[in-house]
Length: 277
Length: 321
Picture 1 (cartoon, each protein chain N blue to C red):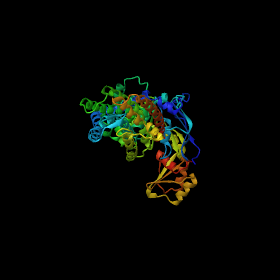
Picture 2 (picture 1 turned 180 degrees about the vertical axis):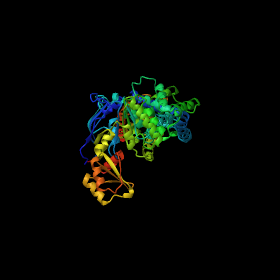
Picture 3 (picture 1 turned 90 degrees about the vertical axis):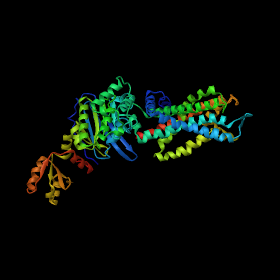
Picture 4 (picture 1 turned 90 degrees about the horizontal axis):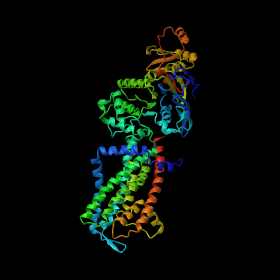
């Protein structure tokens, strides 16, 4: 396994990656109430603000000859938004603190753990956080369904958090590149406001995104958040056709794996350069 | 450029026939145009404390970081027990313990948890990590602090926790980067005792230090670095003898050295003399001391053995004899 990308990818289940994941989990569990409840409230508030608050002022969405209430349409989008933002920010801020301020990574790398395992530990952990937060969102959506506020295939909701967990790997690998690059924590404003927020809000999550221009549409399709949001809609909203699910799933698998390999390899190289020189 | 290397290899604690635990040959590292470490050879045997000594920027920390795998050398080889570090990195890292200059403790955990979590970063870990952690806490007199967070500890205690943590997996060699920097004298002496105990356990210790007394007291052997090169190696006493001369004479402040003395010393030894707080410290061979006293009978001098402070002053001049 000389190829750095292959070496990186195959380290995901290494005992050392799991040891780092375990370390992050332990820290989280020490203060789980503080760590879990406030951040999980964010997507819930977004759902209330956009879905319920704004939704009543928005006419239904005309899709495939059917009218779908905005609040129903936005619910799967919110799962996709959470799937992106939770791992993205986890691997951005928390990882930076561990790397830069606490020097936790320096301590860990003085053991048998190598940079690629450290990165995988962070990626797996960020994915797990995505799993947790998206589970809360799914729970809220289910409650809304049972209250009769929206109508979805509620039995399929539990399928989504595991998918979010896997997609979160790619989003975490993406943000680890910024973690490796930013010189000081106030520079985090760049990836936060120029990358994280725009990508999260404009990837077909809160409003529909498509283009008649084939090149532009191809770019839109390359975005895994878009595929996740659209896939979740095809899965959950009974009025929409199920057939595109295959298309979205295939694109989601392809883009997440490709970007994971690419971003992970770059992050590995950059973090190596930043710490081990 | 530094002069020829002074070598006195008589003091190894292990027999010369045994394979060294650590054997690094020709280590070289450059950053851009600057060569930080140049063609360095280092060996360390079990139960030996090897001190890396040199002024700031001599390449001590970079050398250590190469040895424990944080920095890849541009040239040279590193072997542990005769096995190449590059090829058997994971296996060999299992036998290395590292204590960096910076506090790398996990501040999210208590002292005891720091040890337990660290144990997970090593495999195989055959013994009960809890038992091992408690054993180390007891040995390092940390039991009463075991439930505290590192932030609540003094510098000396933190350093003890760092060393205890680096021993959790029973390494065969321990790297200590300036272990007593910033500690008060009492904490420093306590740490010396701990390092001395490790030597007795047969652990090889490689340490860098700025403190002369520390290097003298702890090291079985010293490697003196200057501008990334090894300029001397041997026991602390032999290194100083070779580099500085056999004795130092000290001319007190009151008798401030006259230009005659300065020029006489320069003619006799080829060196300029060091001024420390108004006193003059002059390295002289035994035979020359008599000549000095005959030449300047009115100057009251004290004669003492050279120490590592003298060595540092010589090193900071840039050239060695």
